[in-house]
Length: 265
Ligand SMILES: Nc1ncnc2c1ncn2[C@@H]1O[C@H](COP(=O)(O)OP(=O)(O)O)[C@@H](O)[C@H]1O
Ligand SMILES: Cc1ncsc1CCOP(=O)(O)O
Ligand SMILES: [Mg+2]
Image 1: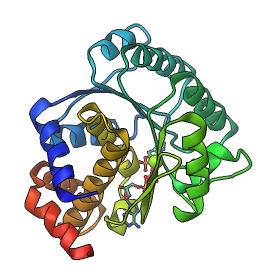
Image 2 (image 1 turned 180 degrees about the vertical axis):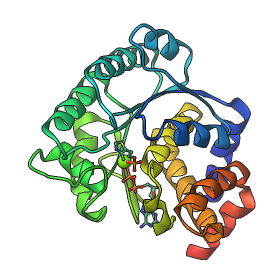
Image 3 (image 1 turned 135 degrees about the vertical axis):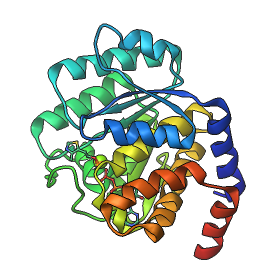
Image 4 (image 1 turned 45 degrees about the vertical axis):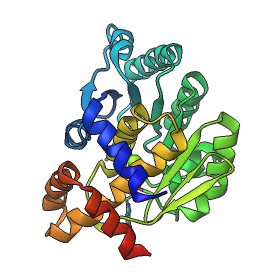
């Protein structure tokens, strides 16, 4: 992980403006579309079974998010996922609320097994729940530390040959062997709904412009964290945090990325 690599990935997003197709939840559609625009990507939210295949046909990445599930949407996700596999475009999956209900566990397993996502990004509780169906979570928020989910993440990554990202105070990114730790960010990020979903959506833009999936995931989570730090320094609370997050993401510069690295080292 280095500032230059991250800046190059960011510049590729801004230059190419990849179309990121999202099948996501009602709560975060607006936030995540705005975050993708702010970073320089082009978002589209489309979930009708009649059109998802065509939309994947023109997209550079697919984001599947199970925040507000329904039977119809699940079928759309599977159709879209299979088309993404056919086109060999990357899929990023967010198992929102895995562990909270049996239905969520069942659907998460179905999406992973049928669509083979390149990246799975969840909070620690969700990642643990994907491995241990006995794991009970509070809802969409995590109740455990990210470090405690690391073994589950490695197992999941090896089993499905994908990258697993655990987000939280400290993020971990693993391909089952390598582990990268990203410790940027601010606790105010927990107070804005959809921050995790935003991370997942942004990962869509990073993988759309970087064939190295592991590197793309690390870059994406680093940009999330640094932007969170810059935004929280300007924010007075969750409302202005949300606004400043978009502005800081839009303006994020190479110098700011380098400075953030200097502060932690
Ligand atoms: N306490 C914290 N300190 C720093 N960054 C955080 C903290 N909590 C969450 N984040 C960051 O906020 C984003 C959303 O993560 P998280 O809250 O784990 O997702 P979710 O909303 O899915 O539970 C990630 O980029 C993560 O790094
Ligand atoms: C509150 C809520 N309920 C269903 S989806 C959702 C949004 C969750 O977003 P995030 O996991 O990014 O906090
Ligand atoms: Mg989440």
